[in-house]
Amino acid sequence: MDQGSHTYDIVILDDQGPRVVLEKSYSTRFVKERPEVTLHAINGFDVKAVVLPTGFGTVLKRVEQIKEEDYLEISLKKDEPSNSSLAKVIKLFKEAKIEAYLLPSVKHLNTVPKHRKLNRFDLGTSDKVCSAALGIYTQVTRRRITPQETCFVLAELGSAFNAFVTVENGMIVDGVGGTNCWLGMAARGSVDGEVAAYLGKFSKSDAYKGGALYLFTENAELTPEELGDAARNGSQRAKMLADAYIEGVLRDISGSLGATGAKPKDIFLSGRVSGIPYFFNRISNQLERILGIGVSRMENFGSYVKEGAIGAAIIANGLVGGEFREIVESLKIKDASGSVFDDVYLKQD
Image (cartoon, rainbow, N blue to C red; front, side, top):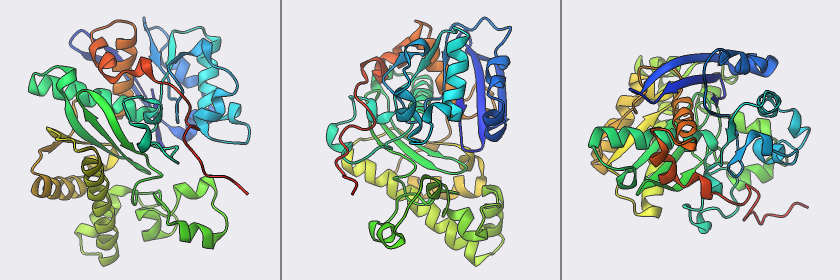
């Protein structure tokens, strides 16, 4: 399962083939109002394991092991964290006694050096770990290599946030989460400290505003597809915002490669924006010209659901010893440790 800003996706994957057995996509707002639909969706299927959306993550846990304090780490919501939409879904699966797992985020992974975690919560939420699993599968099948030989950058370009994960030798070694990136579609991304200080107050909801769509319409009612159409059809403002968005993607990828020294075999684009030809073509052309690395989308087994949901199914399979166990072993998910609150040294007045 994958909870995104706009859609909540569920996929059941059979590792023989592999093939998609079930795919569902609901609006995230609908699931927040009726979380039980997630449980109803898999009724009647002989599901061996489920990976649930876990937001900012925790160390690998079975759902029955979760404690009340875990909900704050998962949601980073100070007010009633155990009543968040994520928590409601998790509690349903806990009560149903289904073999379900909660995953770490990028920050929990010991394959990411400690110095890259300083004063950061968001290096990539748990669904980005899932998308990385799909990236490993994609590179293994296309290049006929082992999971331990994979090396790529994943750029997840969502309807609200962007995020970037660098994989080297089958392990995640770096991540840039959505609130640390440059401009997103709906989200403003990283914030100049001087701007934050001048505003005097910055709330969690502010992180979802100020992106390219908001700057075009002032209320983010435009879709990414419409912004691409407006830029292609000559709107100077849309073109300016598209330029800012695309340059942000290039900056984040280049920054990670500069820091890690990784030599990726591929760059994978995923998320809603990667399916828009205007953005995909401009981004891939510039990346291939500057870095000389092929750009493509990942395998999806013919499914329409988000890559994070497919990757979650791959990890669920691997956790119970299925066909994809080597991918899970390569990611070292079971070795994850600590808390999203670790290595944050900023004090509040």
